[in-house]
Length: 119
Image 1 (cartoon, rainbow, N blue to C red):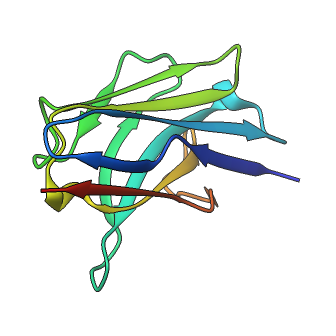
Image 2 (spheres, helix red, strand yellow; image 1 turned 60 degrees about the vertical axis):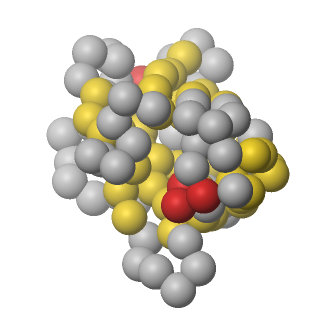
């Protein structure tokens, strides 16, 4: 059974930082591209960032570029999202997702972790 479990969310003031983690089980972690998405209240889920299996390809949404950093530890089956200079508009439920290395579908999702940024 594949599981993705996010952690590290919380309440932070604008300008602060949080580090999200997503630990996986039941899949060969190094065979997957890992991504982060978020969904704010009343809005569609949106892409935030992804990282390939070797960590040599990373991509960010324009809204978070320069503030967020994605990384992964294949030995720990975990992907991270370091979020700095947080803004109230970053408030959302953050989800991690897994896509097969040579695939195009985010087939596995976590349950999400809430990030709230106060002004």
